Length: 466
Image (cartoon, rainbow, N blue to C red; front, side, top):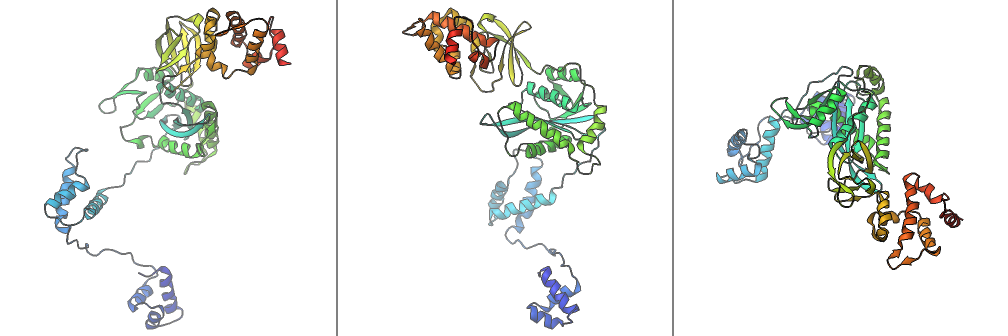
């Protein structure tokens, strides 16, 4: 087959330069038949196979291969004939060719049978629908490479997107993502479409019926939207947010974000979502932000108070004044060591309550078998048992981080006539030092380390800071 450039030369030589077919064929070193084809049309004819190519080895067995593939339709999905098995069966029947020829023929049959998936284009009214999904993305948080769980929600009419990162896909994160999205949209969509995720669906029943999680029903009742769950394996039913997952990851998470905390990462994602409002989606007459201005008038109003996005767990205090959540232990003030407590686990923090009083709050830990201490919780006990100061685990951890002035202050306590025993500072020194540490309950660490203290420490600290 000649190229389009050669075809042009032939036609120019014949029609413009008025050369004969014989001259052109001799000059371009091609056949006269080729010259005549080029003269007849400026476009090359597409190649079509006039008859099936002969397959002397596989040919007699093609019908048998087709029968085995047809039989596959009646077999269980995980126990069907694969290419290698079909090759073994026809080999026993006398086939002497290669396995690759069999596989190639099977692939050809499947291509001929397979149809392109097509979908009905959808159109939504303002405020009626939104879609939600989870995705994953890599980020560097506090110098550690982590896989963040990305919450997405998209309004179907305006295509306004909300995206937020969490350490996990737990139910409390699922709820928190909704609440932040509703504030971002300044209203609640009438219906939200989901996959059959465990945080919302306990069991898939026949047809469209679902047995939903009680916590999700309470959440939905608080905001009064309707839920719609997609057919399993049919992600196209919420295609707008499915596309949003990839769009957000490629545009908002590239290059890999390097942030100090999840809070900083989420501020970056929110700013990116707001900037995306200026984009105009293909075939839409206005930008996303302009469409949202029209849509927000049709959203359900936000309730007076936000839903409390946490899970509640009863807890029993252990002998070390700690409660356990998902194998991790969180400290409780020893002067509020009630036996039975309640844990409220939020996506980024853990509150510990007695009755309705929050008696402790910690950053949420997603590791395993970790001890999360607030050393201030143990100071009253150290006053009673000063001999434990040197080996108290919460104090040892704090001691690695506290200002050097604290260590110098301990040394001066010794110089002021409070001697150190064989096992460390004596009881009186510890009790007086604990009084200084207690100031952290009411004052920031920077201020405690620099302010002149009431007697008997003010003169010592002033001298140390001079």
